[in-house]
Length: 378
Ligand SMILES: *Cc1c(COP(=O)(O)O)cnc(C)c1O
Image 1 (spheres, helix red, strand yellow):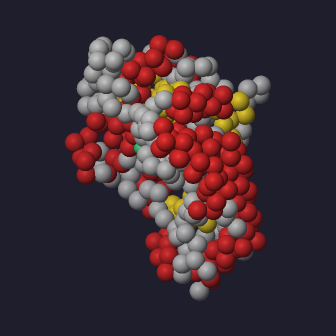
Image 2: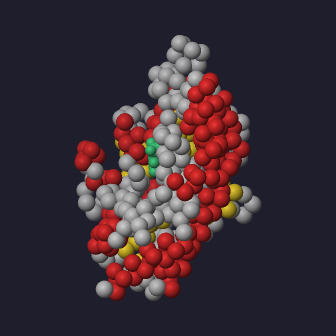
Image 3: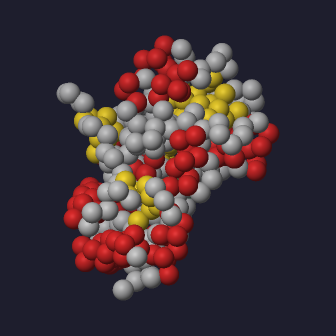
């Protein structure tokens, strides 16, 4: 048996005829940039995320979503942005692209998400933005720090690239990932919870002025065509991506449900195979609806040997992420050194992502866990 880390062909089968029909319609019309498919998708996302009309702005990628959000919050050289070193590069890359300074904060060893107490301790007079990442599909409990940041005039930009559809259940309220802070940034890269057929992204802002500004920034800062109020970028969502995302969005909840079921099953299999002493499964924080964009375990010993053994036996497993961002060569100028973020560094040595995607079969999970047992009992 071979099992890839991700197999998108399984969920595509159900929607193939609809997708091809939409493609034909768009090619016949020869209208590719923005337009009705995009505004429909923005409206559908507003409904799904329970946001006011006009708050969703489609753009070209998750990376651009971060860049646009930072630009709309007037982030410039000299500003500090508090963020996590245990994330995909784009989070801190977008900050550095604008000449601002990423200030890293270590992560929580249980959820792998940014440590909120440490973040509050790192606030300085230069802190402009708090940029948490809802890593691997699980939300940061932002309600705990919302007032503290707001009262200091620090805006929250949520990197929600991995967590479209994630939420937190509070007493009388549901918080949806990307809608708690000032701006939420989403990626529809093909491998994400909701993925297009190429690069695509979205920014959302409840504040209508901020949303309007984001809309201008994605078309070179122009309100009326050829009149530019500020310098923006070219970052539009195209009709083909939007049409496909419109077809996929109604399936998202059932796909997340399948991911959650697969996560439960892995946990059960680790238990029945007595693997608890070797493996720590991902933890779901109380109140959270984890979407398991990635299913990332921790392996105390011999992580690399286990990865190689599984790969050699046809099981796709991978390391997200092998190097903490504060140790990346391009961030040398920030002056961090090994040992500065011990939790993040430890995770880079222990984490291993297992296959998880809609359509993953129980017998495939059983075969994988059997191989893991075989490795540890050798
Ligand atoms: C994927 C990802 C991004 C970037 O999204 P793209 O659409 O690939 O540009 C940003 N942040 C995180 C945490 C991601 O996983």
